[in-house]
Amino acid sequence: MEFPKGFKWGTATASYQIEGAAGEDGRGESIWDRFSRTPGKVLNGHTGDVACDHYHLYKHDVALMKEIGVDSYRFSLAWPRIYPTGAGQVNHRGLDFYKRLIEELLTAGIEPAATLYHWDLPQALEDKGGWMNRDTALYFQDYAETVFQELGDSVQLWITLNEPWCSAFLGYGNGEHAPGKQDFAGHLHAAHHLLLAHGLALQAYRALNLPAEIGITLNLTQQYPASSSPEDQEAVRKADGFHNRWYLDPLLKGFYPQDMPEFLSIVAPKIQPGDFDLISAPLDFLGINNYSRGIVEHDGQGGYRSVPPQGPVTAMGWEVYPQGLYDLLMRVHKDYGPLPLYITENGAAYHDLVEQGRVHDQERIVYLQEHIAQAAKAIQDGVPLQGYYVWSLLDNFEWAFGYERRFGIVYVNFETQERMLKDSALWYQSFLKGLARG
Image 1: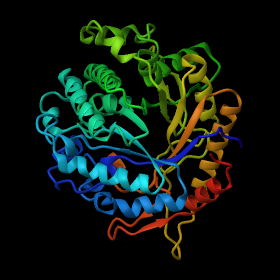
Image 2 (image 1 turned 90 degrees about the vertical axis):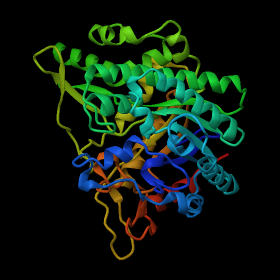
Image 3 (image 1 turned 180 degrees about the horizontal axis):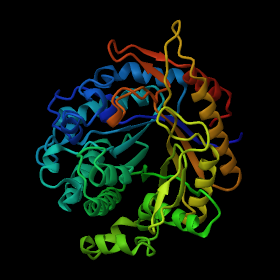
Image 4 (image 1 turned 30 degrees about the vertical axis):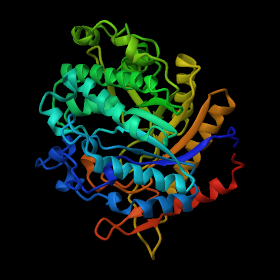
């Protein structure tokens, strides 16, 4: 496997999933604080109040990254740490934490890659309508501008939003994630405001003439038909429109998919003049989070439904299908390129056990090996892929699954906060040592 000079090898986390310190140093309440305390919303009633206590143990975690040998660390900033109510007075104690973290990373020779929004909206803004309220995009621009001004000189890679599909559909459409709303039309309004927030943040960044790259991360899943029938091919078109093109098209083409009139009629009243100019402003890169593939068939009613996986699955029930990553990278490059790409998340959850002081997660090693091989193949075939980030550095709070799903290459004992490199971390360390990097 060959990778281009300067290719970034990293690992990734998110603020609410690892930081803990939910009530410390002026941090405000987020929608996940409220959601996780609502009975029945998170498995076993787990919350992110402590999580991995990264807020206090960040130096130890950076030392682990250095030991593994990564070039870059993708983390997210907690909006309610910096603006406890989403707007108004800046909480400098919150900003100072990220300054300390970034300084620790730079001292260790690790490039910071910062995500502005990984789902932890300030609850005070949700009380005003959250992402279904257009004003939230304006508040986000103010928050982003503050962060750029305070941290812009020391971050090499900026990501505006992580997976707006999840924020919109899981948060406002089916209610599986915070804030737990169930409003299909509302989720499309939320999606538009999320994309607008991205565009406004991008505008603020460009105005400051900062040197780093800036982009957005989408969760993209290549869709496959259950059969060769025309009906199942049509099901793929609709599934791809819902999961992928509804975000790719406005960002990279300047309009929503025109073959989805039922969606267009819902979102049309929320679109204002100039929105698409903001949303489709040029990106430095596109981040792609990918874990599996989708298989769909027609449902007999003009729609589609998912088909059960055909191969082995992870602890999340997601099929292990490495070729899906190659197919996705080739498709994005063909349909939306040329644009530099990063794999900003890729990894797998398994039922990890500590046995005689070790975690032998061979399935995860194979998963990573096979997906990295497909990434290398895509590069050979012309895809301008510039980096790969394993999800995740640490076992963490896995959203609605609480602490029952472990994605980390580092094992975390959530009672003692002890960390342990799993075999997958040792494999990644060995793999990185063996590469010709520079």
